[in-house]
Amino acid sequence: MDEERRTDEADLGGDPVCWLNRVCMECGRFAAEPGDRCAECGADLPD
Image 1 (spheres, rainbow, N blue to C red):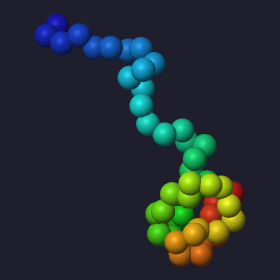
Image 2: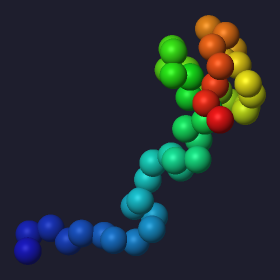
Image 3: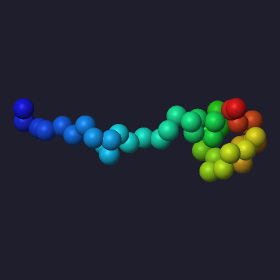
Image 4: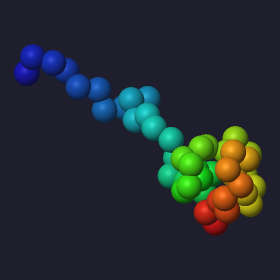
């Protein structure tokens, strides 16, 4: 094996799936705070 792979949790990056309700489906903007409407385009955010 030429390369040793790390499998500890520190290498498991990415954002939690629970933040999907903060992504506007119309314009793709991520809302820093949860809300009902997108601050950019005014579209309803997912539940």
